[in-house]
Amino acid sequence: MEKKRFGIIGCGHIGKRHAAVLDQYAFADLKSVCDIKVAEAQGQADLYGGMSVYKNHEQLLKEDIDVVTICTPHHLHKPMTLAALKAGKHVVVEKPMTLSAKDAAEMSQAAVDASLKLFVVKQNRYNVPIRLADEAIKNNRLGKIYKVHCNVLWNRHQDYYNQSEWRGSKETERGALFTQASHFIDILVWWFGKITEAKTVMATQAHDIEIEDNGQSSVLFESGVIGSISWTTNVYNKNYEGSITIMGEHGTIKIGGGYLNKVEYWDVKSHPLPDNISFIDQPNNYGKYQGSSSNHHRVIEEVVKDLSGEISNIVEGKEGELSIAAIETIYNGANA
Image (cartoon, rainbow, N blue to C red; front, side, top):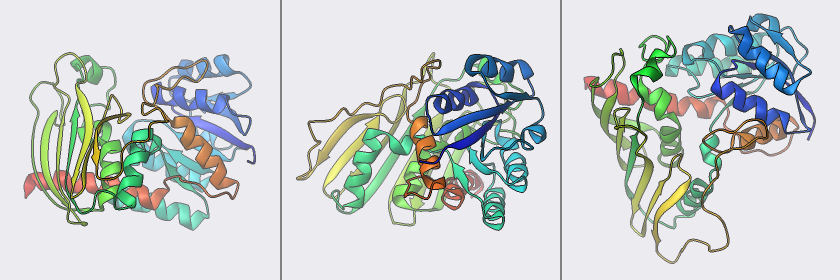
């Protein structure tokens, strides 16, 4: 693969993960980092060496780099993506792509107009259990699929929201689905299509925030599959469950674990689980950084493959729009 030069905007938890992933690859050269908290950016430069440090992302965009990864709070994704595309850089944007379907469409179109690539981080698609279920669905192993149930039953203490001004705000975070459940909803629309109907109830019960911390939605996908999505940040003490359960004519599959990284139930007619692979994706460990969920390295690999002219399995802007539109439909279902 052709070596690509990267810059990172945002050096918080997720930005540090991107830096660690880029550091481990010969085909990726991390040239610059940026954060309004300059000490955070400088910490990454000290850790990995050989890069420029900026406080203002406009300064970083003047650098001779190929790709910018945007790892900032949600409400900044659109303006920073548009600025990077205007500066002639390809973009990798973290989840959620942005906070409205309209903005997502504008971002995708801006990339097309600039003849550049806009990639959206969807690392859970590379998890072993997700790939196994995807193969079963795409090859009609489950027959007609009747129902899917998604649980995102997590804990977020009040301190989590107090740590950053943007969290819990309707203007800057918009809702818990964008932060806690966007990867789950991406998987659902990838498999079952757009959400065409939603009936939703929500409440803010346990936190001093503007957004909801508890919700339930009954949805209909364009494929005809009926779905239910349950999410909360009110679970006592620690995360309880993040899962997707699929019920079909010829089988039932439940994927769970901390980050959709464990097969919890598999009963598929004439299609047992293979017995020669590991079904659990281990938490990422990129040398000088250890995180929680897996497979950010797969995202970067696919980005560089794509930009090198090779066939890739990366999610681009138009596909990334679908999960944003689905979340919007779910929220609009609270007013139906």
